[in-house]
Image (cartoon, rainbow, N blue to C red; front, side, top):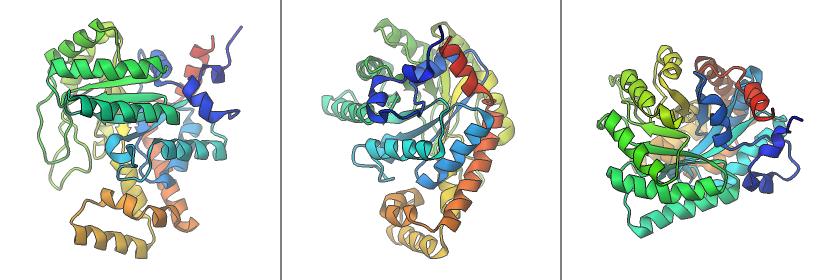
Length: 357
């Protein structure tokens, strides 16, 4: 007798969803199905809420599994620079899913729970955020201790990863710090990845995904800055860690040529984070007077535009429908292009069928 896919939702999500038909699964279950497929799950950092309906519409049209996520800096305990702490982000995403009758499998992910040292207070802060994300209903977490040398990365990722696993959520870990544009960092070596994986699995924790530094950057690429993503190294790492059935998480997608995106899946990438693009689309279609206020604030404060998101959240959330619809439409068009190039068409049905056999 086949199972009902909704019965596979983690307890922490069911607690928040109640009788909802929203199919919020653990990323562990999703990647257990898709790891062997040359497909990439699109994970969307929806820093501004108006892009969410367009992304959901594209996923439904293409029968594609997707994810929504925020990093610690974007949506930590106090809301980060988006003004959306975990509870608010969960309610925002699920609210749109409910409104649109979206019932395909997806997950909500706490990205980059950055833990820069093994200091008990630093680790404790990360533990508090993970617990808040799980309490809010998140079904996937990324423990990012990549700033540390491998022994401490393993130690931190084991301690925090155990909390994630005990909650039934999916787990992403990271080796090789991924920096912002205009900043160079060392490409992750095969040895880096193997040393980390051998260490954490010896402690009884096997992540679903490993984020690596393969040359990608966070944010918008600077004028004249070229995209240099080392797919050869990516595949070498994927092959080396294949015995643990772990996929690669690709950070820093914005600005990457579409023809490259279509090749990522062949090199072991199973999750692709799209963040700054959605912010760019939202800011592009704001009312002119609001855009001017934001620009003036950025110039006066000498701040990146992303940091204006929380300052102007109320005004952005309340823009007239004509502007909101433009954001939704462009988000839909871009999401559709990504999902096609990520080869995720039909993955939602595939996940349901394999998990309910």
